[in-house]
Every structure is written in C-alpha cells, then in structure tokens.
Length: 131
Image (tube, rainbow, N blue to C red):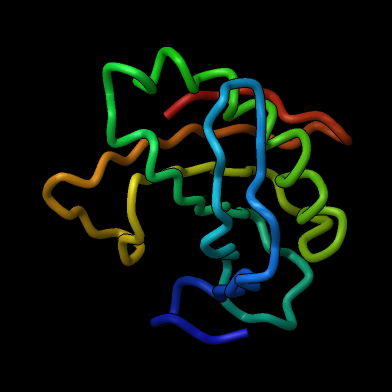
C-alpha cells in the first residue's frame, strides 16, 4: 500500500485482474481502491472508494448514466462488500466511481466522463444513499 497525502491509503489493482461486469454490457477495469482514514494499520477504516475505468462510457448516448445506473449497486454488492470483508471490516460507506479513462483522484480531465454513487454498509448489504 502507498500513502497518498494524509487522507487516503491506496491499493493498486493488479493488471491481471479480469474486467468486472455488472448489469449493463459495460466492462469495468479495476483501477484502485482508496481507504479512509489513511493509516493502513487502523482498523476503523470508515470509507472504501472503488475506482474503475470503463472506456465505453465515453459514448454517453450508448452508455449514459441511466444505462449503467444499476451497475453501481451490483458493483457495490459484489466488489465493495468483498473489499470491506477483506480489508475494512468497520467500513460504513462504499463509494463506487467509474470513469472513461484513468484520472488521478480528485481531479477532472476534459473529455473524460466520470460517474459516482455512494452506499452505506448495513451488515452484508449495500444501501444506496446517492451522491
């Protein structure tokens, strides 16, 4: 793990990990996982951010938010809860973000489409809270 600033611990996703699929036909390439608070040895990690890349969403007519909206719940239920169980058992929030290209966290890049959605963790369930 690598410390980024003082807010996050980031875990790079291995390039060998296969793309993820959810409800839509979009393939999501794992990009990185961010944990808050940053200290890797603190068990009270409260927020898990899952960052994914999906070049296909650049075509907003074919894959606009309304098309991929259900994917956020599916990705939280599968990947988000798995990551919570493995690395952040006290997490209370999962934020799923997808972008049409790799963008450093917290930045925007012209012509890169980015969507986000937030969920609270209730036992083994992701509960949509929106963003």
